[in-house]
Length: 112
Image (cartoon, rainbow, N blue to C red; front, side):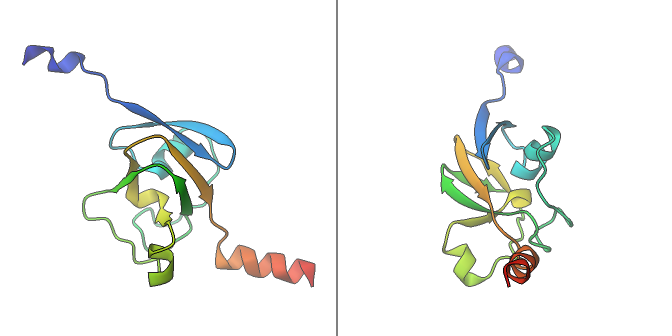
């Protein structure tokens, strides 16, 4: 159909730690955050480092083709944790950036 080029790419809203970020279809959640100057930790951008872990509070995500969730353990995989670099939005989302083990250790040391 020659009108197919007129079809706009759906844009979803990702609510991440109090900030609303538009996410285009097929765009990783990490790409969307970085594109809109929202600071989210990242390293490898391929699912190995785990710095971009997020808790999916509401909404639906789709893993990228050949997504690698090596940085998530079995408990995290079953508790709504996702990697922002390995997922795209399939609806409006509500996410919370997870605290990394290093951040938790630093926080615990400061409180001690």
